[in-house]
Image 1 (cartoon, rainbow, N blue to C red):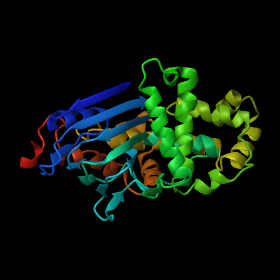
Image 2 (cartoon, helix red, strand yellow; image 1 turned 90 degrees about the vertical axis):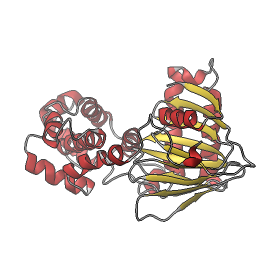
Image 3 (cartoon, helix red, strand yellow; image 1 turned 30 degrees about the vertical axis):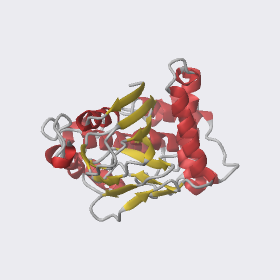
Image 4 (cartoon, rainbow, N blue to C red; image 1 turned 135 degrees about the horizontal axis):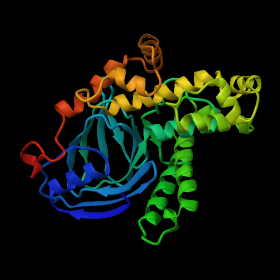
Length: 343
């Protein structure tokens, strides 16, 4: 995707650009004759992140389906963004002093994005962020990763992270920037993920804040890296021990101490994550739960379904059906915005 500096006075063109860089959407201008629509979108992709400096000039409203990614909206200077996500959740207000952190799940509505609001808009790949948290803590996160919806950007870590993200994006937009060199890009991306995990509130924040935690030993890291690289492979504890270059007993003891589970339980956790991610993105008309589960190494459907529900709080079929809800009721990325205000 790279970087893009996009300018337009056409609402349809702006909607398509947001769809290409972020998410499919419906965009309507809220009629105000004193603020003509004039979109200015500067965006850059940095690995698992898309960072944008966005403004529309006029007041707009937007509707999305499930985002499928974490997302931070942080107004810079004046203006506001009024958002809703999920049926039962309270409305959220993003201001220069408080950003909003959106969840991958739940239909998202931007009721009002004021024309005077220039926003830092950051999309974060959910699977990449979860994997990064696992690497930092040395164990798979128990339960679904979620953040408090409000992020204080008036001071402290929240303000520092917003400034860092803005500077990183500004530098990366330059064609000759070192931000695109692998030796710089990967540490930069990790620093942005680290910063968000340290700035926002989530169940693992306290653990990340504690200094002096023991690092995961190399044999455990080797085994975990092998599993993440090929979770569909029919690993055995003996094979993982060989890859880790330790005995079976040593590997089992190390996993219990540093990961909190056995090596094979870790294999199942990684596979469940991959199944969940694929089901969320799948078209129910093209593939079924059994096919996806089998591909990721789950041969016994009953045990798989029970573990899946215990992990994600819903059945695999519910996840698959949910993946079709937005495509069935939401906008076609190539269609025109609804309503007379869309022109």
